[in-house]
Length: 338
Image (cartoon, one colour):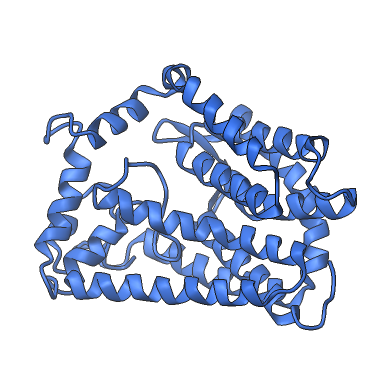
């Protein structure tokens, strides 16, 4: 973050200071979440997810506007993004509802309230608009439904309906969202529509094997690379640290995700395993999509790179998810059931 926001006349930026505060407070959140029994957090999360939907509606009415989107609630020192809360609390809502219902997920009547609540939150997020977060929550929800054992016919019908209604869905996309898809398919001028992705690829490629060196990335320092502190921070890493630096970062993420799955496979309780999976799935998806979009392998969407990109709310939610996941890992051998 220091490097991505570095300017010779002002080396330490406000973004660096805010992110430093976010990481410090995030570590405190992580420790607190570790210390609380995950089952208690699950009960709280069920009701907090319903509260999140209210906050999402409030954001559309009184939210703070930035870059053409109305996604934040201004808290003074920082701006809070309620849509991030949906990533954290939906797994708790999902698993606690199934435990309380006691009928499993074999009947469609059981999942109907879950689908309705999930759909409402996704629609509210899309209205902000925030397509990236909506995609992550949609994938997380469908993944949990799949792992919970829902009838496979549900997915067959769902994807069939999505395929048939795709032309209608295209009409609801914002002009800039349509443009991003067109750019991904190869259209657009390199000085206009394709500028962002072109500069990202130049930054990545110019890093070579070992990179240009810390604070020596020209695409970033001379501000050719847009959103270098948020969505395109991986491009900064590639330019300054090169292929080996980027590969090292990818390996660190891979080790973290491998540890996730080792822990998940060791959890014997079905609902605790579902909760743990839901807590980390958004981190994995965000990492894959972010790295894919900055390298041109996926369309550009507003998804930050976990634990790297600037964003106080995103940082807090990531640390909270990791702490909650660790709470399950710490207690998985002596808690028989949620």
